[in-house]
Length: 179
Image (cartoon, rainbow, N blue to C red; front, side, top):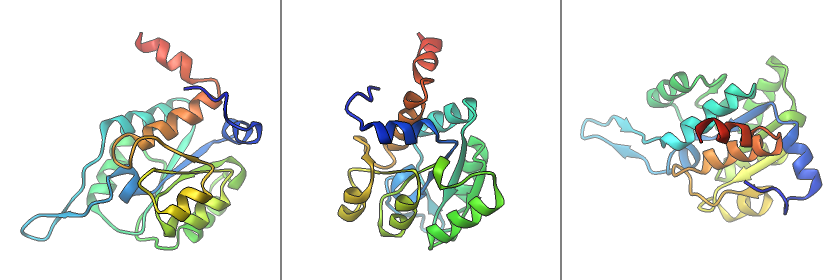
């Protein structure tokens, strides 16, 4: 991943990230809500995104999920990936983010956030680095510092993770481990 075309200010912001925050519906999933005949919800998560999150952890970057809905599948996925902070049922994402900052050693200056819709907008604006997906709301795409090439639920979170790792000079060494 090349950062040559990135403004210096964004490269610097990414180099200081110690907390990566993810929305769920539209970021870690494709945004569709699927229900079984008995009313239970089913969510699909992409393995590419999961490895990206694990790579962040390996490099000392903590992770959070802030989502407006509640889902046992999100709790299971967060546990499987070792997500550091999980906040479900939080429609006001900025309030949830502020609370997270108050109860952790993190602040806006070391936080990157990826979201896709209007409830994510204030959080995207508040963080050192705000990201979105190409299938996100137009206003979110306009306000974000960066937009992934992959859609939500289809590798967008992985691109976000690798962007952070590339800016911190850690991605090449990770790739070398797999060569």
